[in-house]
Image (tube, rainbow, N blue to C red):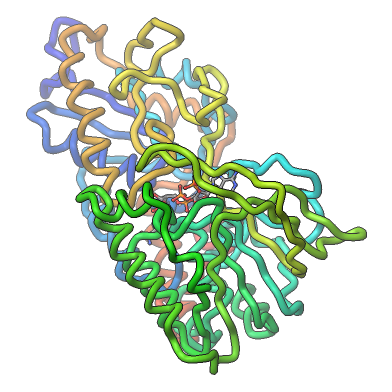
Length: 460
Ligand code: NAP
């Protein structure tokens, strides 16, 4: 194979490594396979299991959303695709090594950790991140050992986005409604003992600025034996918020406001639980002797132009007693050795998906998904996002150093030398089948393995 063969041709296929096997990674692969070039894709993931947040983030009672993985499965069945599960980039293989074995590396490694509130008491026992809770009920190996004490009466969720909605819904819903989902068994046992009666979902801005999508908010009003609670007074809008709902950009906000109005006018509570929507309040401290006992909430007002209103603390505050709290205020990416990191935004710095170091473009390195744009949008948002990155990549091909690369075979050799146990897509299919079989006995779509050892044991 000579170096003169055009890159992206039958004799010199474009070798692409994709780091991360969630939506950003799979939509990048899809866009590449649809392009008019010959390409071989090797997708790496630190877990033995693919699909990222579709497996480990999407709530178990949202099986329709999980169906996104059907598309990913068909992409993974492409002969020019290989999965390298159980391989951590930056530990098992370096970024520079991937640049040697492949022409292109696309980072689609998501945003794996929570943003911090940066307030005193944040780390008190019984103060948790949304990531921990979501990972725990979804059987993610990193979080299976976490302990959530739901024997108290009141829980607080900080943040009013869709992750906060997931957390609040799982806390509020009757456990029987989760029994036949793929929720992790360890979580089901704990949720069965859930004694919570009051769940507060706290937003620093007003009802118009809440980030819930309408379907997710509507669901929060439809939980069995749980009454949504909204104080009528908070629905009186300032002129700027009124302008937001009157504008066509405020369509979702207007629909959400209608739902909040419906919640506020519901007859007195009848259910076992109450789900409170608290607005215009920011946590300033978590308090308690040795463990969480309450959260200090400063009263806010809004300041600024429509669509750019920010919260500003007033002198008023209150203490909301609670036994457990979840911080759900957005995610951040995690740095990988050898790749520049924008610590402020928690993303890899890039220009139109091309990674940069200061002003310099780093040839052959790209980003897609949450590590590129930050944690926003729904699963489908990653498709045009990855498409845009791949478009730039294809434009760059004529300028790439086009010599043939060892690709997946070279990577496999490196890993074998280091004793790294790579999980192939065929291996994953075996793990998948074993999980589905375990689930059958419990009338669940699957019973996930929650340790890497268990997953690998299936292959022995
Ligand atoms: P998000 O939608 O950005 O919501 C974050 C929330 O945290 C906002 O209410 C934000 O308020 C608040 N916040 C941020 N910093 C804060 C602070 N210092 N103090 C108090 N509140 C603070 O993020 P997310 O809920 O983590 O969701 C991430 C993405 O995943 C979103 O695009 C979401 O739609 C998507 N997702 C979708 C689904 C679904 O479709 N079912 C499920 C889960 C997640 P401000 O608005 O004032 O900043």
